[in-house]
Length: 566
Image 1 (tube, rainbow, N blue to C red):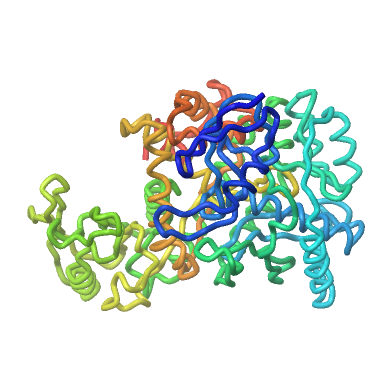
Image 2 (cartoon, helix red, strand yellow):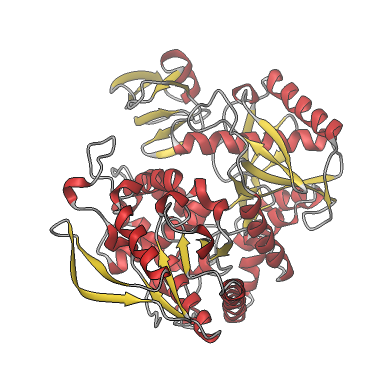
């Protein structure tokens, strides 16, 4: 008996045997996928079946719509990196018996990992040069052996026992907190682990990887997004890493090492205590940054705040201003959005659209001249921008700086020295704000800070901007391209980094985001991401409406769910 499969890569129909898997079709008809924009060819790694991500071992019993994906697709990259993590896990157990691999967080150079003695909370063990070489060599041996990744569902109690024995208590705790009878595990050459998404068919697919010693551990370097034949290059990341490490250490001091332990605290009725604790800590962070600025008050007259979408820049600038007032300084705000050039001078992007995120979209000469005038004790008339007519205008809004005044400005280019090259850089204090969560799902499945911000934006856009969840998801790749081009390359320029992540925010966002995601229709191009996010949120216990009332009106999260009084 045969069924029809419509392959969207080329809109061809194929009649295949009932029960055959995607891999057999891929090997026969689609060994590679072609990027429609660049024409580049990529090895097929996974597939979207009726817009749901599936591994190539998926067996077909009914007619389906299938799209094969490679490393050029976000879900293809996630599939590769998950598989690479299991490959590394296997090699660690072979080369360093008794050591536990902990994938802490993503950095510009790759996935930052540490080896711990006996348990994820144990002391870090950093291999020497010879140890790293043995680890690389073992990974290469496993790749050359082309071993299959296999999966099956087993009783959760059995999985919990396996994970406890392997020194992975956070995995075991997550299983217990979910209360499900069965769970899916993956096998590689007798090794058992869990991953929250599909893997590639075998280790032979993982030809490109690197290990870069860093801090107390190392970065697992996947292929570069722009060229999968090469590993992700080494990039500056010391300041960002320090921010992640500080937050990770704080998570552990609260006794929360993963989603499972967070779920447990919520189920024990400790949500309000956790909210209060998180908000108190964040207020201290604002005070810390304000103290750094105050210590430089003799030279610093401008504070630039930058960060990616939904990082809480607006709330951060307001709360930082409050802390500066406490110290006797008088913050004055200049909105960088008023310094756009007129529409006829706005640059055009590769798609023929206005590129409002480009540095050239701003009137840098006017901005630089006005800042220099203010720093010299002069008076300027600030522009206003009419977004409907696409032009700046002036309406008599004058400003000058007195002795205790300080400018506070936020925008995507605020960390780029090219924004105001004519201004004395020593007079500027730069702050990078982002939601850098170090809370992980478990020992080797970290939480994407990008997904965290996407959920924030989705909730805010729907509640206060009239934008559907579908539209937010479809717009997100363009937002990410802008961040990768204009923000992330400059994050190490910051004099201070502020982490706007809160331990309780995913349980909070689940309450608002889950119903929105469920409304996205299966035929929508946003459905794949909606299903992926719903699966992730399925691991998390949501806050109740009563618990959400405990979120203070000055919280960063009120910027996204409403009720903020700043």
